[in-house]
Length: 266
Image (tube, rainbow, N blue to C red; front, top):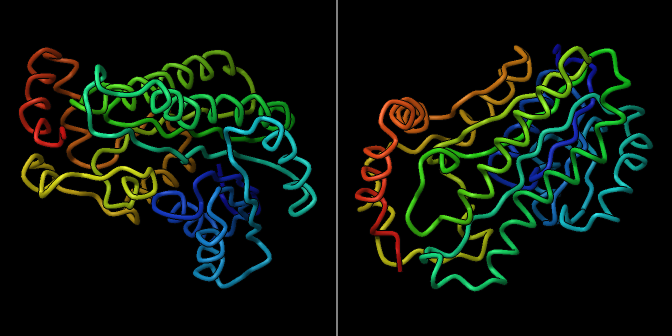
């Protein structure tokens, strides 16, 4: 898909990867309807973009189905059309084992990471299928295929996104909609803070030998995947390595992640 002149709906546009995807799409000549629960974050993204008309802000909780269903009209009012949806918004869980994770936390993670994506897809697909060229991009996670201790529900939510996206790809074969699933590894964002999750001590530094990928690079990979219509893309050497290893020897990959990341458990 040529970005120029296209209108993209990007969730999570108020920070991190979503912000970088937004800025790079705008730089490429596209227009973006930025969706986020954080009004201040969206305002900052608008400021970084230069407060251009090509960027509109939409303060929406993607777990609120009624609010999401009002989005298409708002985006069309601002930009005239919808050519692509990029579902970036997501949260992690508290770093505890499933046995210690409250049901409320499980439901919160699934509502944002899975049901939010489902609602966005169902709401916007009728519009996308009407366009001569369209794109649907869902961000999963390395955790969808490389289980992390203390992030079981987060990984399950992203595995659900993975399979949903792959099934949508199959269902939309022969249509104008290109469907892509993205697998980020460790990205240098504030997702823990934005998720309301505290990480004990220096566990992050001690537990992981993986190099963190910058949000700028993550944004570049996602935009490149949109342009090239990729089926899937990994972000970071950690995600690429674990993708290969989990296919070749899933038990070894699981034990390796457990050893490296187990220190994150509180």
